[in-house]
Image (cartoon, rainbow, N blue to C red; front, side, top):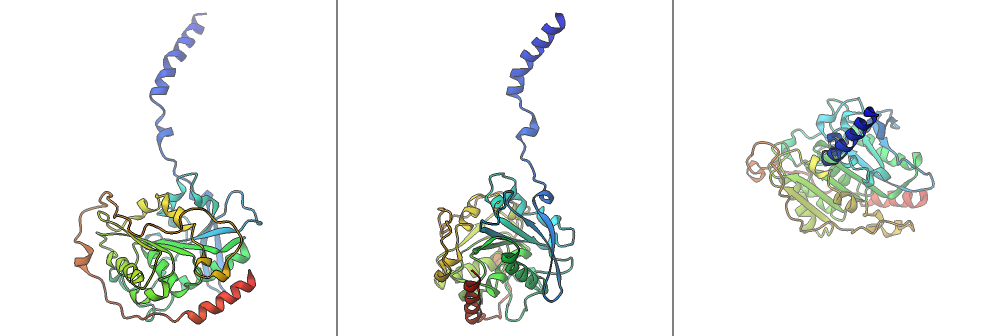
Length: 338
């Protein structure tokens, strides 16, 4: 009897305390195991090059559904062959929330081998490079071949292919747009750089770019210049968001945002090429990012550096790539396949 009374008193005493002081573990954000979310794969190009990549498919993947595809390009620090560390930086932030729209997309994340680059820029600090003088890298060419093969491997909506990347992957994102403007419906490059002379080629592609204003690794003026030039040439869906107190690492904050995916996944390739219009429903989310978004008042990511304008950027020597014939040919091929 006494034991029963003691047990009852213990429950009564502890119950309100548990309500006032919940377990710490329940209040912490759960870090997803990306090795469970993504599957490790290899892709062999027609030329025999082997590219390692990871892929996420929706849990309820249905071959009858046409899924959007998000291509994620990692940075230089995530190069290798383990197919794990390239998922632990940047894109992981978007998978920390179970309601993230990325869970309903096909997400492809190739891994660049150690010692190689997505874009063969001599110095990251140049922040601008010539796509005329620098050939497409073997690694990036393999990524393009992989992306084009996805339609045969999975059920995809080819009007809704998107690309995003950080640092070296930010360079890759811009490079893919310039060399293959007919593939992607929209792009989100982070802290990368591009040849501003190619702005005319990509001005009509929806782009939301991000860069830290105190970035000592890749000066933010490279992003600012290409975005400014695209707008000057008539680009109506180009947004540049600056993080004034950040250095190079902005990806932890950017990929944690919810609005970026709402915007990105609302873009459709048929907005640029009406002949590709399909009857599949798309999200009712706004189709444009805010063209005059205020700079983000975020915390500093390290010690202060001199403004990027003072550090300067390398000059570009490239010129716009002639892609009209290529684009037209691929679009005709695309129409026949669809």
